[in-house]
Amino acid sequence: MNKLTGKVALVTGAGQGVGQGIALALAKDSAAVAVAGRTLSKCEATCEQVRESGGTAIAIAMDVKDPESLSNGVDRVVSELGGLNILVNNAQEIALGTLNNITDEAFEAGWQSGPLATLRLMRLCYPHMKGDGVIINLASTAAKRWDMSGYGPYAAVKEAIRSLSRAAACEWGADNIRCNVILPHAKSPSLEWWMNANPEEAEAFVNAIPMGRVGECEEDIGRVVANLCSDEMGYINGQSIAVDGGQAFMG
Image (cartoon, rainbow, N blue to C red; front, top):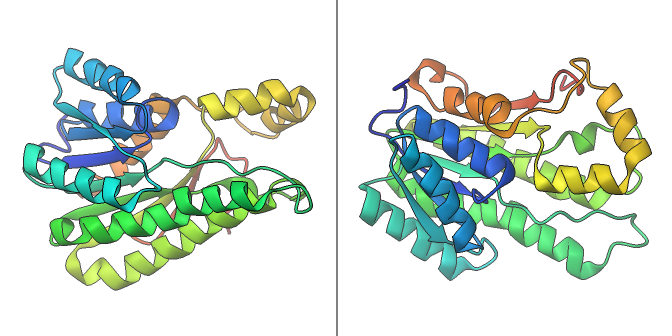
């Protein structure tokens, strides 16, 4: 598949889980991929998988909470891969806890790694993406839970990302930059940790998915992102799409 031939993508948090699945899917559609994350060895491992399939990838050590790290990373992508067409903001520190128990530090980390990092990276990438750009940001269906107990701080930072994404879609559409959001369920390390720590709630969670399973990082989530980044999806902009087997109702 060559839907993304000639495109250059930057994916944060791509050393494992959903980010890795997205990076692999983009590469299989012939995009050159910059695999960014805090742990360089994990990013290198993802790059090796890309190269084994005949793709092009570079690993970038990036702390999304550090503005200088973000700026240096974007500069390196443009310098080494020749441009930047696709940005996937996937990295996120998860702030779970009740309103009385969540610490200021945990909530601040969620804010800095989520909405603030997303905004910073979108602005850094904007000049390079004018005329041919796609941004995919990641949010969560946690905000759609009927019982928000323990999920308020996490859902709050993810909903902020959705608002920023809608603004980007509206403000930058004239520059031919599209921005959409996916809200995925996938077998990431963080979800597996949560399911192991909360087995009864996890069982109910899976039972509430009409398709009866949690998605695969590459096959289910990555493929959606790759398709959204293709020219075939060129009129989809400003949308939030739950990639969750039908569990959430986004109306």
